[in-house]
Image 1 (tube, helix red, strand yellow):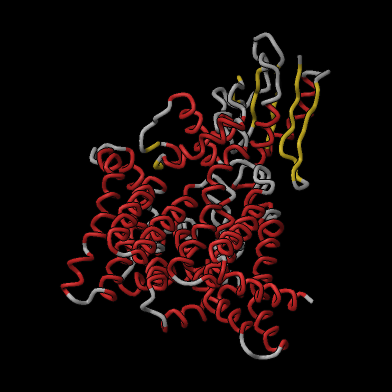
Image 2: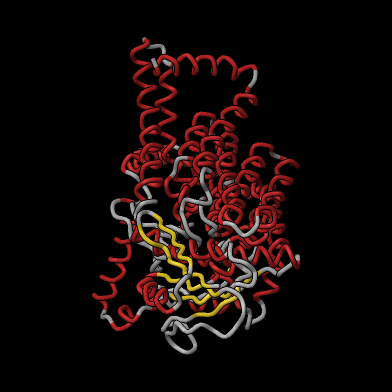
Length: 540
């Protein structure tokens, strides 16, 4: 029944596509975007539960923007970040307040925008069937979904890269003056990608390589090249104008950007102590192990990451890997197509910064996700075209089933692996997203203005950005052995108003001692996933 319905829909689509091609594309793109929106926006403030301090620093910068306006092109937050994502985050925080949902909604929408942009890009540069399957696969991508649901800067630069390539492909299709206008327009999102991520320059390099390969393929003669060079020059000229404020900032050798670069250089494999003291054979082994771990992160064994909790499973499921292999084979046969050239170049170039770096193995290469989706779409689109063959219903039904079944299975795996396996991987997600202090902060936010908090945690200081963002008006002090000025103490400070002892992690064992010392208090607690996040004991 399902296959028959799909075949009837396919025949109607073929009939309507001739008379209303734009309407069909709008409908397909809207349907795929709706699927992506459901996955990316449902319970966005609750899954993942908790606010990572890096996320909270985006929120604190966003609050600065709502109060001050312009805060420059670079921030000290999260060990140094370009500020474009702060400006994207600011409207959500301004409208919804300091909440996890308000913090994440801006970048979630930017990640969501990648789905219709990919549809438009592939539709312009290739064909409708590939556009539909590519955008649907990106919508269902576990890899892209993971970063679309957290306030992390890695999700925005792929969207800007897609915007730049869409303008370029529109220019190639338009030709003449239209080509130059489109290429000039491409410079805007290309330049903005530099403000989106510290490795945003890799998007510029990828586009440069794409245009270089297109030049060799499409314009082999000098005469043709003379008419072509102006378009890429306009693209990079506009991008340079957009990036000028950033260049002006980093021209100062004391700019915090260079502090960030120096600190992250130490994460490089080639700068590690093991590599520097190893002999030649040892160096080769270390690099080989790094390449193996990089491949494993995507193919067969996730590598846990304590920054974003990725690595619970590989970035690609087995079905995606099979489709990618077939897609690469098909791409080799169609190597002159501009979309194929762009996809292969981006898949090869974008991951380079992460290849020899420990950590960030899936964050930094996220810009390759849309192009992986396109390569995976090639075999599916070919199968779907089989439904229009002259064979009988059984044969066409087989083609439809072969095209649809992998997508359904990928979607089921993504939903299961993200909303169940990843979400309930308590040791990882609880640690990375600081669930204990998130719950404690939400509680402290409800305290009366004159309450004073005595805070106990071996891991979290009261000044942690998570608390500062979620509960900014709290007054209190650390009393733990790790962060308290006078060491561990349960002495009540000599001040008026209620006193609230907030106990996290190992310090929850102090509750009985505090209750005996100060009887008549009120106990509050919170649990998440069956584990205690905190105990609070309030005394008047």
